[in-house]
Image 1 (tube, rainbow, N blue to C red):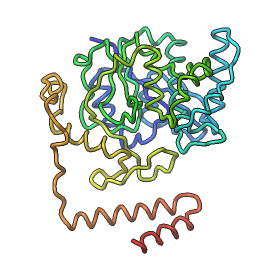
Image 2: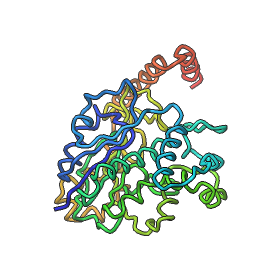
Image 3: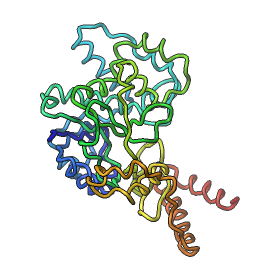
Length: 344
């Protein structure tokens, strides 16, 4: 039996919605230990179940400018490799949301740069504390997934492949979840080194394409390391959730889904997970393989009565009002919202 470490990156958001399914359908299903690589501030809730469950924890400050986080990582890497520090900010000329969270002349509306930093933070912890050699396979994931099916058993996931959920690739590879062997995981996590140690070389490779996103940046890194041909995919059996009162920064606020009582950040994830939950409920279902012939597009959502649609619509409007009231400049936001409703 393989020793498995599940690693959660960046934040432990939405734990009140997700931990129960994560514990049952990921940790318990895989017989895995839990590691965290997080950026946290003075308000961090150490009572949350991810923190309490974790066997390993590595943290860094939640930087207001993740350019400073990249500087920190560069100083450590250059010291480790006895190299001078090149000007990695040359890479900020490569436009796109990948640099979200870094202060620059062209700031991006995302916090995407926290991910490569936290992958590096995780890798340093795994290596420094001699944790990596204790595990055969590592699962790199996020805390805000609601799991509607058990995680695929590792017995059906080729250990020589790098596994991703099948969807949300956006021209690259999905950066929300991956499964890799100990042999491959280092080159899955060290993408920040391309930026910090070889910015001029990387700039020449990337400058001909505009609008790089996280998924494309990850695919480019895997290509540089000869790993992209090893990628394989399993069905999307989880979806990203956001709590009703979560007003933290996020690329997608999502859409309130009354049937589950919280926000669903990405509709395609949600629909795929709902569909596959009708055919996969156990490891035996995965091993049986009938899901391979299943087309989630054939699953039509159940009909909703007119009265229930009205009720769901009222809930969504109410939450939009609540959100407008809770956010900064709430009165102005509410006024704009009411004008929009009136025009509609």
